[in-house]
Length: 68
Image (tube, rainbow, N blue to C red; front, side, top):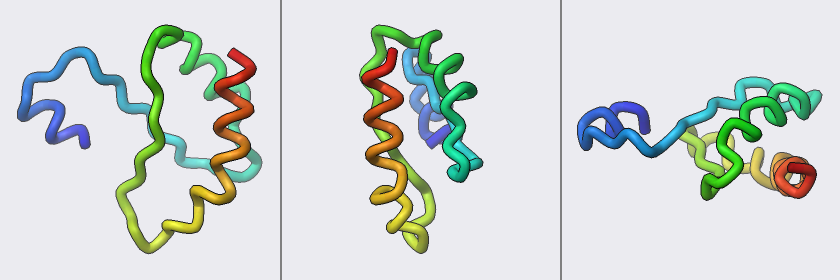
């Protein structure tokens, strides 16, 4: 993702890594997401071996976005 952004010279895309999923990092994400209040937010992940993480992260992520 980062390499592609650099290759294209894109300056209007922020990539935020969520390294810790449990406990969910509400405070850290809140601070980061508030910097990008008008941004379109999407979830992406590199490793397909861990596809199941979205079912854990989705409700937390959606609640996080609603709280902004």
